[in-house]
Length: 150
Image (cartoon, rainbow, N blue to C red; front, side, top):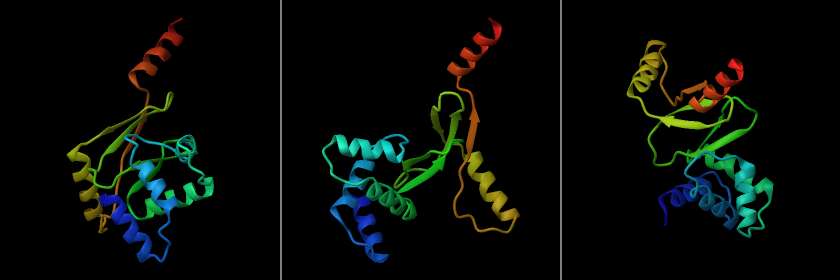
């Protein structure tokens, strides 16, 4: 059994939730993603694969997957929540283009040190942290420059 499936199954049992084929199907489909996705993308992907799952089950299962730490949920400057698999991955941060929505990930130990130092200075126990940097990707910046010079 996949480690994420085993972990999720144990989480559901510990919280007195039923382990259902639908919940496990959502997890298996989520684990196929290698990038950020939203709930509707996941729902449509499952429907296209022949699933009869309801939209409510997808949303509820995404909440449970986030609560147990398999997924993270972010809002990258829009009202739309985006998810990504974090189970078994290294902490990372995001640079987001405000124009096209492109999301790029990066690792930087300086951010990690800053988060730990800030928490220590403020007398906090660090639970979690993330950094989102917003701007224009090089393509959108060039396109914007072209529009302003013509």
